[in-house]
Length: 208
Image 1 (tube, rainbow, N blue to C red):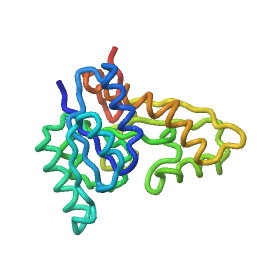
Image 2: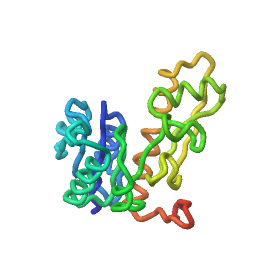
Image 3: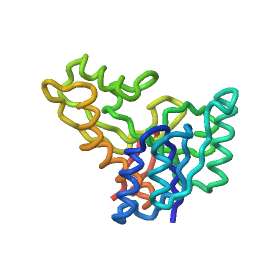
Image 4: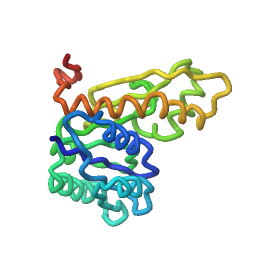
């Protein structure tokens, strides 16, 4: 059984999707063993506690710089014996030492169809504001491996979502979460835990 450690910063809706999938037996050969928050008041911690999942708070402000915080996070993830690290609304920057310690063992869900509306500065509502400003007819979500390049790791799964006339960044965000993020993130976790993902030449392939 693979140990899944989930990193959070806020409300934890993607964490809840993972917890719900776990209750349904849909995380394959994996289980959520720990939730780590970068903020002490993250509601995601309450979601974890209600479901009997161990929680740890590693507050970014307690460390002088990204390197020191990343070193502490790396040690913590190693102590937790993490087989898979899931970014679920984790808004704190980590440096390359974490990626080096967990190569192709960290995944993130991004609220757009990469390579559109991704990279530095594209997070939260900023992603949806940019999509609406461009007038795209389809947006969606992407689950990808985390590498040193922001939003640049191998793509595991994507799901498109229709952009509707009259959408606001908030309504589009909600639809993408409900129709895409909450579906493909648990699925990607299941595929990883069942050893169904192979990375070749920087591309991720789903094994049948």
